[in-house]
View (tube, rainbow over the protein chains, first blue to last red):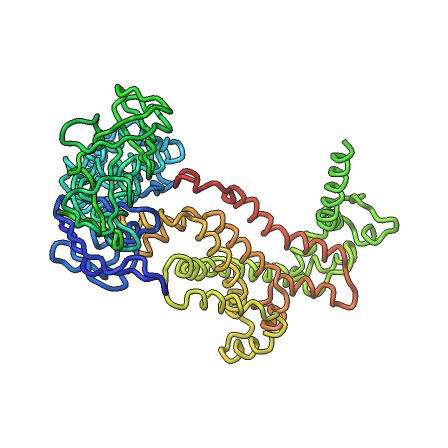
Length: 340
Length: 291
């Protein structure tokens, strides 16, 4: 196991700075997710941890060992790629055993490790096949097998599920979570998918423009977004961010320009203690267990998610109750979170 | 229908255009001198036989030399044909092998490793091929002479490498850049250094390009005439094109022998192509990455 510490890690490509003075301490055995839109620097950061990209400035530590200038094969990390990156000329068995072969592990031990990994990932019947004879999910399991077979202390994953279909993604997600529990290794996982981030992570680092916007637990990120970018990046449908039209909590100084955020699901039927808003239902989209609707207020339109038993219809008037404590308040100029 | 007919017609014309000279070469190598020069020409040998080949291969033998009148005039250089065939093979194989070693490592460095001056290196390598060979003959002759390599196999190998390596580097770079970068990354993570990545990823996946490079180098060296003419002096290092050209420079020309020698000259490249053709298949990277 290893803790990973990035101190002022910077990556420049000519004039472009992809990652800017990044400070990040990943704890031993932690599942850290780097989350952000494409081009935010998350994959570059992962590649620098792997040693696949040179670090322009700053220091990278594994535990207390400085690995900033170490080539990838001396860092003892394992990595899973979005593209699977299986060796097409090798069989499944040869692909998985390859890292051990390179380390000159005795053949008997390779066979034992291979059997164990194949069993764990349900790959035993496929060991003799080549990658082009496998489905996407099977290929990704082989890639996982190649990564776990050598019991690395650091696991790096670059959007490993992005090429899989929705059903497979869910089952692979729980497989990865189980692997993290059983391997007890440090995981660094890059994704742009908030659902993956929220379900897998111990902590999430939300990145944009080569800078970490917020580092917190999934609950913390969702409940207390540090700025409007983080607030709108997580949550589906997106948070409602309005300069006017939503009630200002009492603690917000009068006259200060703010942006008020309301998560679509933070609404209830009007009752005591809630602020009541009235409007007209413009659009209703049933989602099965819930209903998504657009509610036109006098000054703005809100996207809301309500239980299906509300039975709302388009064109009807609707009153909703909002808990002022559930509102998110951001400074209108800096877009940073304000708290009482 | 008319379209298909035209297509067939032009295909046939093209095949005839390409294969015609080769077929005439084959046919005339089996004919007597008088049959070759007959008007109208004999498209097929009237009395096919291997007499021209027999005469060439026994040219060193004085007993057979007396029989030269039967088959036509035997060129004085015929005795050098077999030694020069051997020289050609030696030079070709050395060039093919060394070309691959140098080009492979250079192409890997330029295509894969991100170092300062990478583009400049590539352009410098390619720029050397912009200069026409004829302009290089005299400088190269002086260099080779000062190295004491004149009239040696080594002189030809070194010179031909200067021709083939830049092209091969260029071919391999474009092939390497088509190999998914993630495979290289995966290999590095799995524990490969640069030699490991070359051996486990780029070498097995670029087999078609490597075979093409091998054949290109061999054929270039096999067919080359100008440098061989300037840099060699006698049968110790002279290659097949020089000796065969010498058949024509005698005071008379024996078409039957020239053509028989020509058949011998095209055999090794043809055999090479047949031998390696099954490696020249694409789709080797299928299934490597999602695409």
